[in-house]
Image 1: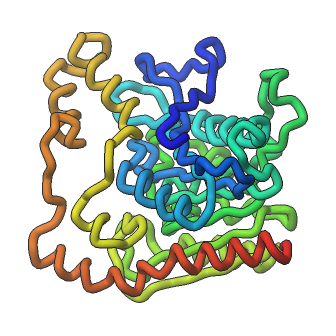
Image 2: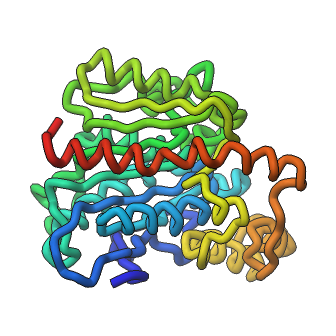
Length: 335
């Protein structure tokens, strides 16, 4: 079933203090033929401040068209520092539970539990990479998922946040650990430091001109994979802005379908307007306006910049087919 909302936590299992009624969930894109398909878990980016709709429906449809049963993860984010609710490991717990759900319900969702891939963008790439290197650390307290692996069989990392070092996307780490992040936490989430020989095979891509997450992030992870003997592919395109998603005209025109990944932000804005937070009530309207949740559609770029971005799409837009070919070979021949 396409569009099914799959809540991943029971209410008594989930306690993020700035959720205001939100519980992380999956949105399904399942073929109706009931044949067994590989599974793809799509994890949008957004700096751990947002779950971007630009990296949800569009890549989901790409992998769905390639024969995957696809699930988009709306995970926990930390939109406002003034709420004093650093995420810590909650997003990692979210994605870990999501993978376990796909394996536990493999028959229900018509997926092959030995072919479960993750595809993350930007901070979503960091979250997928975190599961790849730290998955063994994430225990699930529910007896329902005892003995069910959370290890992805492969990962596609698109312009991923990787390092907390020199080339870090600082705001992602602030969202995770607060402004006074400790060295221990930052080192733990600097993923290039934790690659092991049993890290899942990875496909990475990025652009040289990414000004938000420096291209060195994917180079650092690729070098760590090589050193550990982990199979990987690494594609670096010469031009392109950050956040290209599937790099199509549909993406450029901001046609992302229903922004279902913004549920937590809608709930937060409503809580602010009800006076349930430390934020002034007008902040709720500001949030809705900023994210276009007030029904308005805003152009992101001026015409000249938009045309420059358009020129980069044909080359960068090759990445989904490259990833699908790589995954197909992986499923066929093994790592």
